[in-house]
Length: 312
Ligand SMILES: Nc1ncnc2c1ncn2[C@@H]1O[C@H](COP(=O)(O)OP(=O)(O)O)[C@@H](O)[C@H]1O
Ligand SMILES: N[C@@H](CCOP(=O)(O)O)C(=O)O
Image (cartoon, rainbow, N blue to C red; front, top):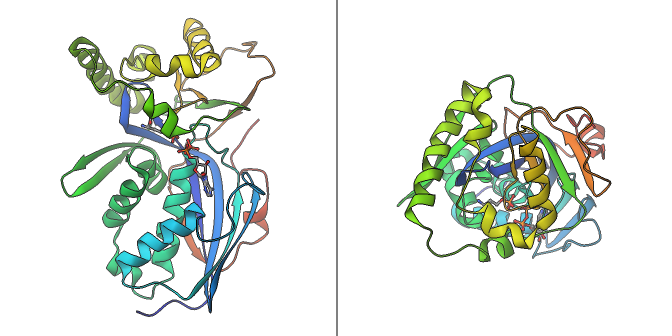
């Protein structure tokens, strides 16, 4: 196998999964990005991280971008002798904004770009299947790869997804708390089975949500009702549950973002709505492109610590 000479880089968006009733299926790509560059070296693994996770994330073989690159190199046909990575992270980690999926997608796409005929050995559909397998659910990696609003599902052969255009009136705002919440912990809070009536209600709302997001945002409040995960997780994130309830009472289509503890509002938040100081509030555009790969190292624009697209 031949490795490409010189570095490659990728910009990967944050994502908000579930969107209320679409547990493990629906997701939205947001204009908040991590930038990662990688190159093949003659030996060893070196990772330099700035921004989110600097000083905390591993700087070698166990870094999630590296383990994801290794998984992709296995599929592509061989491992390089060494790797050097630079990560500029802006997506808050363990908050429900898909940071782990962004790292996984970055790793898979960087590995593919570092192999001379990588796109032929691992096409886009295979990259989605591999990234979903590593993450364990497809609802973050799908929008991260494709951009926009995605519907993802898993067949016996692996994950598949479609991206749909979102109606103009949809205005995502995220409320990000200081404390973290690991997705694995929030998944452990879910019951093995749910009552049929709760499943039936949620299926109807998930179907309505596809219509509301793409054509009729006025229906977003009823379309974001869920009975599969948010109530079961509320005890583990009471401030998140309280903020979702307060926003919904004010008429805002608010949900837990992913497994939390971030809150996502899909419709405009009324002027003067007060959250207190525990929350950072960012209006984010919807990312419509998904992950973007280019040749070369990170430049001035990619190293800028403030996210492109973030308004507040
Ligand atoms: N950019 C990154 N680089 C390396 N590892 C990361 C990165 N982002 C997240 N991770 C790993 O994933 C964990 C968070 O994953 P998860 O609990 O799924 O939260 P999130 O909702 O942010 O995806 C972090 O604690 C870290 O171990
Ligand atoms: N469907 C998953 C989504 C997890 O998203 P994350 O951004 O919190 O990792 C779940 O709800 O567990």
